[in-house]
Amino acid sequence: MAVAVLDRIDRGLLTLDQRVEVAASTVVPGGDGIFVLDTAYPSSVTVGHVLANLLTVSDDTASRLCGLVCPAAEINRTLAAKGFPNTQVQPLSDPHRFYLGTSTARETHALLRALVAGTLLSPSSTALVLKLLRSPVAFTDGIRRTMSSAERARVATKAGWFVDARHEAGVVFDTTGAAVLTYVLFADGQADRDNFGATHPVVQARARLGRFFLDATAQLRGTADAPRHRVARQRPSNGG
Image 1: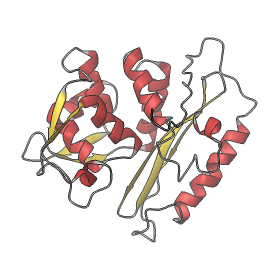
Image 2: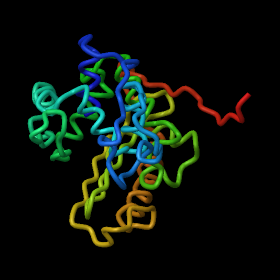
Image 3: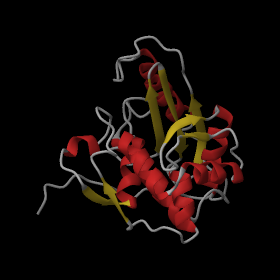
């Protein structure tokens, strides 16, 4: 979804500061994320705000808001045109509504490789996606759990959880911002389907793998011509 929305922005059909109305009927009842916690609708947010919630806390309502600015058919066409025919949403009768559909580990891996190579989106859109996926508020229960703040900033990760599926995919960068490892971990048919927390066995396994991935690549460096995606330091503030 984020790729399709940002592709529209890259083509000049949409802007990050364009506003989207959050109606009560759009909010997923009992869903994950921020929008369901607002309790005051209608409200209005920017496309940039929608993408931030989608890619950091995996907000359920954010996916519906993406559909308001990029219909399901266009999402599927965009992904297929970029070489991902098996990564598709499932359209509904309302062209702006869809289920998340399916992907494959191979296509997810290829998508991440294309993203860091700079061939998937424009430089500004690429930078936005990686900034969100490496931010301190991005998913920390799995791959990034047993890492320092600086180490977490070197890992761009996106987790997904639904019913008995627990997935996570991302990229590990060296200290100069060059990608050194891409991982895609799909795990369907898992027990303990009502546990979406850090104690789920699959999520615990990913935490162990994350530490291993980081340590195993500690001495690796990207090639001289590899794109660098450096991290801007983020520190908590007490206001003012």
